[in-house]
Image (tube, rainbow, N blue to C red; front, side, top):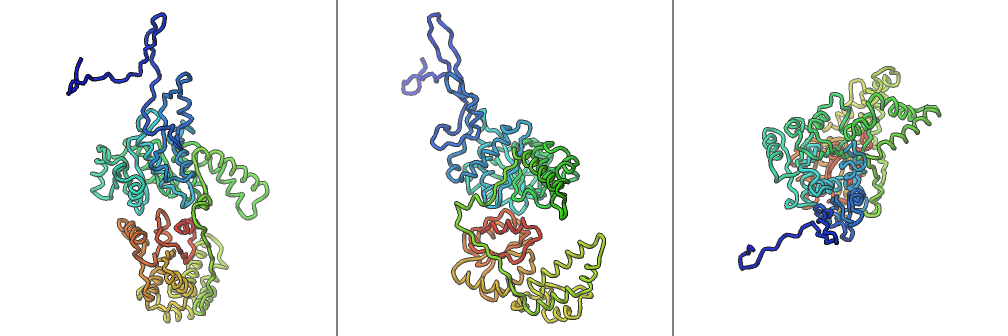
Amino acid sequence: MSLRPGGVPFRRLASNINIVDGSNGAAAQQQPRAPFQVHDPHAPGAVILNKSQWEAGKDASTGVSTVSAVVLDPFLMRHLRPHQVAGVKFLYECVMGLRDPAHLGAILADGMGLGKTLQTIALLWTLLKQGPTGRPAVAKALVVTPSSLTRNWAQEIRKWLGDERLRTIIIEPGAAGAQQVLDFKGGTVARVAIVSYETLRLHADALAGCVGVLVADEGHRLKSAAGNKTISALLALKCQRRILLTGTPIQNNLSEFYAMCDFVCGDVLGSLAVFNRVFGGPIARSRERGASPDDIALGAARSEELARRVEAFVLRRGSEINAAHLPPMSLFVVFCRPTPVQLRALSDVLGSGSVRRLLSASGSDFGDQALSILTMLRKICNHPALHAPAPGEGDGAKSLMNDNAACDGKAPGSVDFAQSGKLAVLAVLLEHIIGAGDRCVVVSQSTAMLDLVSAMCAGKGYSTVRIDGSTDVSKRQDVVNSFNSYNVGQVFLLSTTAGGAGLNLTGANRLVLCDSHWNPAMDAQVRSFH
């Protein structure tokens, strides 16, 4: 008998072979072996993501399952709200083929503020650590996101899991990215890579075959697959498990919704031509002005059928779910009376030759002319100095611009802020907000309007920080962190387009939307900051 140091004999490891002594000297019988499980499925409050699969694999006589129970990590579970637990379970069932073995994709289309990022992180952590066979379901994961959000994703993963549990790597643009791709493919330290859509197009072929699950953030940006370089790059990864995240699954038309569905679950809605004939066309016609009762009835029927077909892989929940967890939000729509200067400018535009030509126009240029006029009126409503009159708009408008120099080429501080009804109201709001010790986010579609607000704040001694389209991507998250965590800036100036996605602004409890975006989904995103 072999001895361990100290003279203690070794013990034979316990075996799963159970020797049964029978009167006929029956041979040993093999008992079912339970696969390795990371977390105890019998623990109080345990959430088993593959419960039906686990229970179906149980032996009738012993109650031991040959399928490993995939249990949501209790470390993350304590942070998840009920709707988020349900979301993680939905995503797991989709990508593991429990809902449809032929399709391994999902679209998480929750409204803003419901925690799509946290739900996705919980899923990735589960897949990288557990699986029904007792081994991890995937070895590596890739998150593709707009360039402005790459650091935000890395920070969120670090926030919820810490570097000691899960390391990430951000694949940078340029020559450094190629080496980072090699490190990710061949290394074992970073299990999750984060890359922008633009950078992915450069390295898609190199990353092909090494990704077990793919997450595409802001998935509504994916358009028709025909000739689309972004979708081609995503498909080149040859990853079957695909998740799209979006807060606005349908922005402009059903063709964009089709592109997302076709990417995550190809062929489930047929070809684009068939989809438009069966769903897109009838639904669009039913919503047109003057639609017949038959068109409306057909559109409603096709809409219900479309919802039924996608419910297996699309999860959409509204922000009302958070009502029980958040303090009540007060939303006020303030109508600001225009100043006499603004009224004169508006009158000049509406009486100009451009508008007269628009009202008498017919043909394909009607929409372009209308958009141009609406843009002029929008600028004047913000401040008359933002509008540069086109030739033929009248002497009044030209003399107005001579008296109130536009921001273009002149310091915004030289403009008379009192000539804008909006800025006059905003000045009063900020005086009360900052006077009460609060901070405020001011959002505008126009960066020129942000220039004016910034100059007005400077004149009143309010400190500001800002994110717009010119903000360096690598510094964007630093601006957010300094505002949220270190109280840098009393007013956060934000461009609707540049800041409409993926920002967590927790450092302010007041938000002022100076002007509406042409796309209501953009306004809904910025309102979710509050």
